[in-house]
Length: 438
Image 1 (tube, one colour):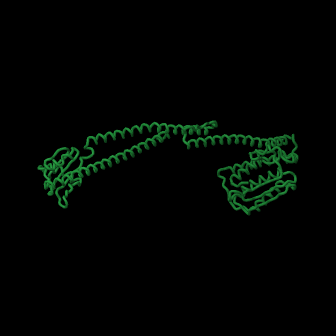
Image 2 (cartoon, helix red, strand yellow):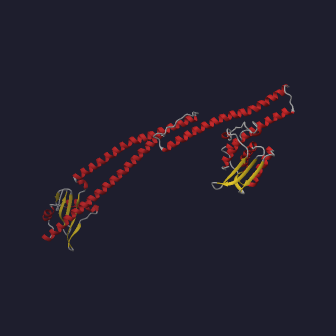
Image 3 (spheres, helix red, strand yellow):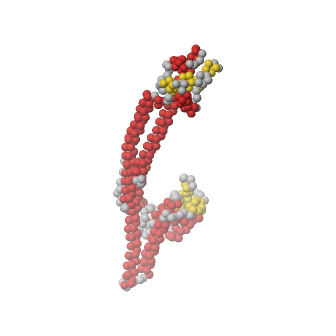
């Protein structure tokens, strides 16, 4: 049974069988106990009637005699009983079983009737008249099954019970089959849809109607996965195009310049060589940022947690920014309301440094860069904040964290200058990895 349908249906079937067996066991136990209670009640009722009559007979006639006992008990006897009466010396006086009076003179008959009592430990009970034993009595029914009416009743109850069990099994079989088939079909559709996603299709619809809650959650997850894969594939295609464009432009310029110099068309002046060197630096910068972003996004990326001193952290950021830009017209304001915090120092330096570099680029002349570190909510959370007095064009705001996006509208006529377009993407990924809000 390898299919889900076979297993689920088998589970329903086994559960049904176990339920029937439990009900059957309870039914048999209940019937057996009821029959036992019936036998006990009938035996006590019979003895409660016979004992007073025999006591009265013994007092009236001075003892127990066969004919007198038969006359006295005839009104109480029926074919479903046995009544054995003995005198004080345990000699048989009256033997009655199954509607017949048995011969008390035949030892074989007496042995045949008394032996079963001895085997069951149901020996005759003494009859007393005051403190004097006047005889012994063994009286009981022949059993619940000896009565034809009882037997017919039991057969009727048993037949009704079995009919109910069979009917219940048949009725339960249909929904069990349909439920198992429905679950199996839903899982099959999910499997086919996931297989299709694995084969590259991205327009798969997952049906939810009639499916179990868990299967609906799986379907929702599969659709989310499909949408995420579609988005990632679109992003990857766009990224590949952007990388190709960003590499092709400086490489083409470099190649053109180099070919011109080789063919003697272009003179290898100091200015041209410097321009070619800048193109190489741009390519190197792009490749380095791509490698770094790939490393940060790698599943094997592990954080090196340490206690970071806030003053040293901010000071290093400021020194790096001043060395990179050398803008005397930009001032720096730093503030830290806590002494230290936990994180991956190198990862956070890379993230915040990219933000600071962008803030400097977009700061107007005479602008200010503010870097602050403070405790945030929830507890044990640190906020690192970078502010500048510059402006980013409204059209650029939705795209600032996109990979390879570089604004063509820079302050102070700096259009087209700048880095690889990966800096803020790297920052965002670093912060995501370190789980530090800023």
